Length: 140
Image 1 (cartoon, rainbow, N blue to C red):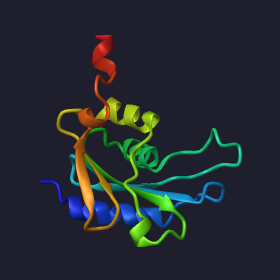
Image 2: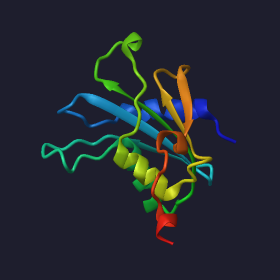
Image 3: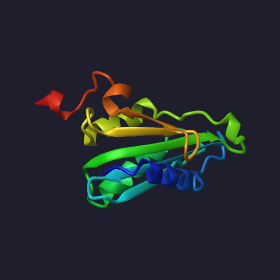
């Protein structure tokens, strides 16, 4: 069972740890493993830009590095540092993060929650945000 409200809350907690001194765009993610554990991630920027890591990938890489490779859902939040709540927008994952999700998740069942606030969020499946996704199954 997915507790999407808890995932969204954890994503907001992770967002507070964001390191975004260049863009001032802070992102947090909370990834639910099929083991029931939540792995949090934040975006981590770098002055050289290319080494920057998104919150979603931080959460996935943390989970995989701890041995978890199966997932049920992710909640993602993001926005400009200092923005007012009424200025919030949904923060969708970039293409690279969607591809990482495709590596580890069933696109038909994996849930992606995008939240403006702890009570205002929308739900998608990975398949909806990455139609015709490419995975290891394409290499069989």
